[in-house]
Length: 290
Ligand code: PAF
Image (cartoon, rainbow, N blue to C red; front, top):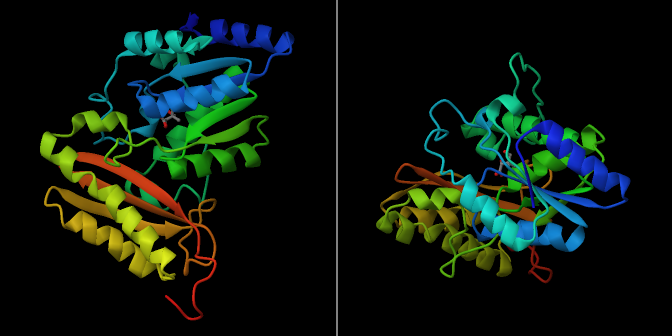
């Protein structure tokens, strides 16, 4: 496996593969890898001839009061795990490599970045869109895999790729959960034992809402309340938002009359967790239900 720390090196590796007619798959990460990430890597290994994983804790997507310094980092064990999986190259750039002195260009994806996490983390998606654009330019992958857990990020990247006519296929990977339903996240490592126990309420709430939709409820308020009730039953959790939106535009739905994304952000103590579920309207619901 190639472990490249410079843009020049990884660019050369990818260019050689392209010249040989090989399809390049790319999985961008911030490291602290867990099974959620490795499931994305598996998709790339399956779909592409060569797989590159980047490990870069991107400072431009963290707000001033966020956990940039505390963010878990273990690049060596990440690289070892990726080597064992059969990944072909890891790109592990420094901050200066990604943002050389004088760097001053940022990518803003309007609309889709605004609600949900965008309302509470100003500048976050600008940082994500910027770093992904730079990574796409350096690696020129044929496909890039993003997890559905970060549903708004996925929508932002899809819009970015469409609007800037970037020549990369965006592939979505499923949310990977612990047996008790908690979605895997590098930030789960911050949770105390009690917070960890109570955090299972996110997924329980989402499933409760899905159950209501299955019974014919289509009003977003009822679905949102079901999630909030589960969260509020846990003293260490406080909901930041619960929203039912269109999965591509991130605009709120007035009714569940097409596929909706029910998304939630919660603080468990000081740790911010997100989760979501895609809900389809029940096909045979009674007239006027909901
Ligand atoms: O999802 C992440 O880990 C990050 O937002 C990403 C896509 C690697 C960009 O820094």
